[in-house]
Amino acid sequence: MNLIGFIGIIVFCLIAFLFSKNRKSIDWKLIIWGIVMQFLIAGITLGKGLISLGTFFIWVWIITWYNIEVLVLRDKKINNILSAVISFLITSLLIFIIYICGAKLSSIIFSFTWYIFLIIGIVKSSANAFGKNIKLPVKWSNIFGVLIPPFILGNLIANGKTGADFFENIGKFVTDFLAFSNLGGEFVFGKLLSSDMGFVFVLSVGSSVIFITAFISLIDALGIMNNVIISTSRFVYWNMKGLGIIPLSGAETLVAVSSIPMGGDNILFIKNYLSKLTKSEIVLSLSSIMATIGAHLFGAFVYMGVSATHIIAASVMSVPAVIAISKIAFPEDEEPVTRGNDIDIIKDENYGKPMPALMTGIWNGIQSILIIAGSLIVFISLIGALDYLLGSLDAYVDGQLLHGVKNAYNEYKGVVPGSLKTLLGYIFSPLAIVMGVPLEDAVRVGYLMGTKVSLNEVVAFTQLGEFIKSGVLTEKSIIISSFALCGFANPGTVAIMLGRVLPFSGENKENYINLIFKTMFIGAAASWMTAAVAGIISGLI
Image (cartoon, rainbow, N blue to C red):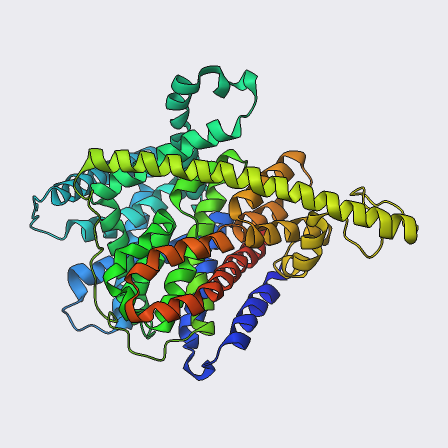
């Protein structure tokens, strides 16, 4: 079962290929790029030993290569092979220097470099947001881009750790950071949040959702988020172009990259271009939102028992995954207006205004938790009602008429599923199996997948949290489920996204309406592809 995930990758690509109406325009180099990027990310986060270190080194080399080109090589007319070799040697030398410094000294060097980078970045971004442009004599961000990645890897090797340990520390940092929300929550709600009162969902999860939503709004207002998104978009463009792949347009790249932290609101970054997007751009832009979850929900899912590391990895992997799936189903056959252009993010009215942004974030967080709580109340109640109806039908048909016996789920064996869990489980279990889920867990994971697509990801993650607490899933199934459920692909998101894009769609309105449901399934397929990749890598541990 370790390598069966390869079948899942082929199946999801094949489904997209069968639905494609313009197969001759598919750029297979771009598709391969999207799949390889997933393995490189999964190798770092889920791999152990040489798998994690090897994939981490590739990423460090690529990032260092990009920054060296921007600093030195771009105007030297050096071909890609020589540029790659020079970057490889510099990367290896920096890693070796940090490694021979030993565990303590390498940690001091890395920490000092990292904090200097953060201080300069925060000060410069904040000053720009307030309209004061600070000009430095050198390309400071690229200098740090050359130094920091090798310093990280050299420090890890010196301390006997791997890339997986590094991302586990990031996951721990996110979890610890979310815990600060308890300070405000306990002040407001008192003993309702203390351990002796048990877990109160809307209060515990609500505190973290409001806190993170407000924090994201704050760093967005200070210009920090903008710089991270634009820098990442430029890196993706450079990487594709260097590999001989026709790069994505500026608009769709910006939306795809920003979907990880922003979670749907990012579509308005390009609102001035929405009326000019090609069909392929529309599909990728909306699918990228369907395939990822916003940072404001990270805390909610962590509180449900899901690994922060897995959520972060799944969100990042979903970007290359959705690029691959969407460009198979809807390859580009037009000339995008923003191809080859570095477009700016359209800033909202709170840009450069920290306090108004913070208050807006608080209000958005309150709305989010009310929607989460309301959807859980309604959907879980509906699930209970459907379970009752299916259970009654199962008892009559399979129990009384067919004289079936009860199985481990307290349902009668026969032709009628005794619950929604069993019905969705049987429908989606074949997909769960090809993703690498062990046979004994296929029905349960299939149920989670069906719940996510038919209802929403919050209900699905809630059910996953219950499965984790009850110990009914294997570790591999938990990992695959965490990746498969990571995304907004559900009917509710379809309605929300239409409400956001149609006011700015102009003559493109019909295309958005016709394509929106297709983007939901493409987003879901992309999440499932990342789960298949995660299943492969986790099986190699």
